[in-house]
Length: 265
Image (cartoon, rainbow, N blue to C red; front, side, top):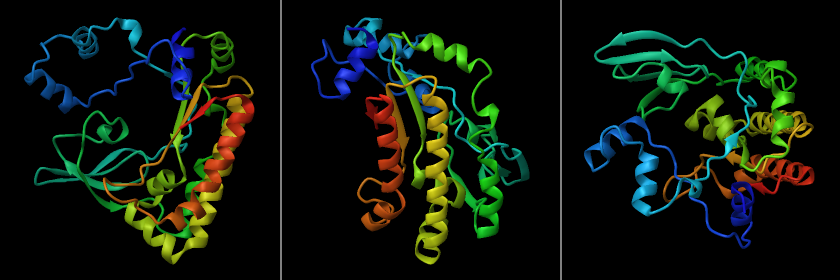
């Protein structure tokens, strides 16, 4: 079996020739801690891991994530609004205003290189008027959502032996990005009709993006990210999940399976 067949066979509870290894990547501070705990300086952590486990490089699976842009366009300007007492008040690329330690800079909020504790001050969608402005940043037919060499790259991917993935936010996570966690949860109680409208919009936008992508290439896995639970409990009720999230999950899964994508996660 090649890497692609082995990965799909494993996730579909089949009979792979062996189970692939798919470790996550460390943040900056995690990697620094590993170097104090036995990882030799100047050593690639993946090579060290494989050597320690007695495995060859072919045991690793590293899916290629398609370069399709599901994020807002245009982005907000990243800028420092205030610097005082060892802290920065910044606007990030998503339009949030938050406070972070000046050990970091605003780029850490765009590229999660490390764990950055923040105090949320203002989120970009706090009213219907805010939402009407935000939705203008999500045109699925924006030509810049796919790279310039998209067609040629997809042609090369058709006979691939590696894993191809798409990763994007599900409805809860995306609405939380717009409204903030507390703001969204309160909005689900106080303005459920607005939340339903945002969820339906996101369902349509993602489905339209999938339509553009699937015309040229079918991935092996689509990962719908939903950061919606702590260690013990979900952030919203089962009823809210069924109302605001399940319709999108079912719609996208049916669309992807119909196109031949074997795994939706």
